[in-house]
Length: 93
Image (cartoon, rainbow, N blue to C red):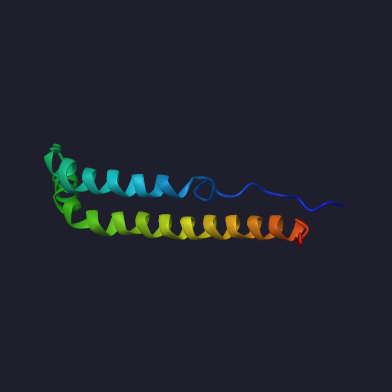
């Protein structure tokens, strides 16, 4: 019986550059847009006031994840090129 193959999680299917783009968007959103939002809830207003302080941390998480994905992508490309090189016969002139 063949083992079930599951699809990789959603985060493993996105390209590395999407993580970098999300880092920029989250940083900008938390740093500049969140403080401008005002609600009737004092609890939400306090959270929105703290958002600029969380912006660098949130961006770093996405940037680190993007770096890991880029490293994994490069390893896969190197493995493919190694396999392709080993299949080609060596020519001696």
